[in-house]
Each structure stands twice: as structure tokens, then as C-alpha cells.
Image (cartoon, rainbow over all chains, first blue to last red; front, side, top):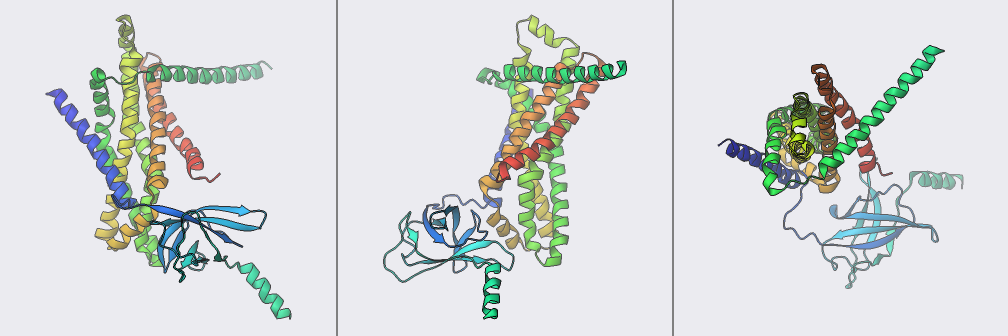
Length: 151
Length: 262
């Protein structure tokens, strides 16, 4: 009888731990069970990413559709190569999609906004988005403004 | 001159003693951990999980609820000034999963179960149960020490998970049910930001390392305690002090390694 209650208590304890794990994964981390979590990646070159970080969101029309996977600098061209992870299967972005780096709020985090094009062909995994616009850097803007003022 | 020599000698003796006990502890741990629980010996392990895990549940659940409630209250009153009450959920979840859950659980475990382990093994040594086991050809490291270390390694992560769940529930009770934060914003804000590996997974890595440290310190202090009443009381105190300091120091290092982006 003694061992029986012992085993039951330990079993209940382990079960409680597993329930807690499921709760934390599903309710707190928001992991969707059974959801199609396919994704593919495309690259985009920007002249300036200005504080864009990996894991920043990629959005279209304000809806998050992916994340920034990797940021590398191409020394030869002097621009940044950003790898974007797009949720879903290849075929949901046209080849003339344009990418823009924007800022959330005034001091908020940088994110990438995609604007769909009108092309019939779609981007495959590993393709490059050619139409890009880098982040606006305040110092550059002020510099430009002052130069124009001088003229 | 002689005083200076005495001082240097004293420091040297202390240092050697520390290094020596570290060596003994490592040897004990390695010898004990070559024991992997077999089916026939599962009873020993279950008994120990009951002792260190199940019996720690009450203190864990009570502390978790209070900590979750206090955190929610503090977050809410500060965030309400900016009208960002819904951010309570994500603040609460991040703080708990990354830091407070693993650390506080390990600290409570050191106080509740670690000291008990030290006292138990120390008493076995004092009453010469360990040496009589050796006499009978039973290795006390395998029979006594190893199941306790395994039980700790299994129990602490489980307790951490339960701690996190109960603390978040405590936060919900205060922020949503009592103060009236919007439950939709509360949960979705949390789910948007919290990531499975980055927050929950890395928190559990911490918890596992803490489990290793606490059980190691506790069992070694008991095993190495001088077989006197004074030695035992010193050993139990040491268990709590050393493991608490180790938890907090290693937490900093772990955070640096896991989240530091170095």
C-alpha cells in the first residue's frame, strides 16, 4: 500500500510537469499544434539596413508573414544581404515584389514591409527580391537637408 | 615575519582544502553517475523523486502563485500609466520563463530538498550506515548517492515547469480577473513575443544546470561531512549557502552565454 501511494504521487507529479509543459508551449509560447509550418527563404539586398536585426518581422499590409533570418554584408558591393524567411509555400510572392525597411513607431524596432507586384511569376525559394529600399537614416536626411539649405 | 608566514600558510592550506574537496566532489559525481537506473532499481529512484520532487510541490506552488501575483501587480501599476496594461502578459511570461522560474525554483529546491539530502546522507555517514553498506559489498555511491542525483535532475525541471505555470496563473488572477486587464490582449501579447526555444527552452536549460549544481553540492556536502553533530549542521548550512551562490553566479554566466549575442 505504501509503495502504491508513492508511485501514484510521483506519477501525478510527473503528469503535472507534463501538463505544465504543454500549457507553457501552447498557451504561453503560442505554438500551434498541427499547423502547416512550412516556410521558404528569399534574399534581398539593401543599401542600408540601419539596425535591422535578425528575427525582426517581415510584414505585408501590416500582417506578419515572415521573419528576418540572416543579415550579411557584401563587402564587394557595400550593401547588406538580408535573408527573409517567408511563412507558407513558395508561390505566394510575385517576382516584382518590393521590400522596404520601416520603423515601428518613432523609436521602435526596424521591420521589413513587402509590397506585392503585378507579375504572374512568383518567387521560388532562394530567389532575390530586386526592388528594395533601405532604411531612412536620420543623420543622412539631416545632412541632405542642410546641403540643400546651403544651395 | 612569522605572522606573515603563518598567514601565507593559512591561505595555502585553505586553498588546498578547497581544491581537494572539488576533486573529491568530482570523483564522487563521476563514480555515482556511471549508475544509470535499471528497471529493477526503479523503486529507489521513485522513492527519491517523491522525497525531493513531490514533497517540494507545496512550497513551489505557494511561492509561484505569490510571485506571479506580485509581478502582475507591479507590472500593471507601472504599465497602466502608459495605458499599456495588456503588456503585463508578455512581461510576466518573459521574466518568469527566462529568469525567475528557473532561479527561484532552484533556490527553493536548495532550501527545501538540498538541505534535507545533505542531512540525510550526513546522518547515514555519522551512524556508519554507509561504511556498513560497503562492508556488505553494496556501493553506497550507487545505492544512496546516484538515485538522489538522478531524482534531482528529473525533479527540478519538472518543478520549474509547474512553477512557471502556477506563477502565470497567479498573474492572470491579479491582472485579468482582479484589475481588469483585457484577457485577449494579455494572452495574444504573450503568444506573439514568447518563443518556444528562445524563452521556454533556454529557461529549461538553465533549470537543468541548476539541478545539476544543487544536487551535486547537496549530496557531496552530506557525503563529505565530518561525522559529528557540528559537522552535520555546518554541512547543511553550507549546502544552502554554496548552492544559492552557485545558482545566482551561474545564472549570470548562463544568461551571458544563452542570450548574450557574444
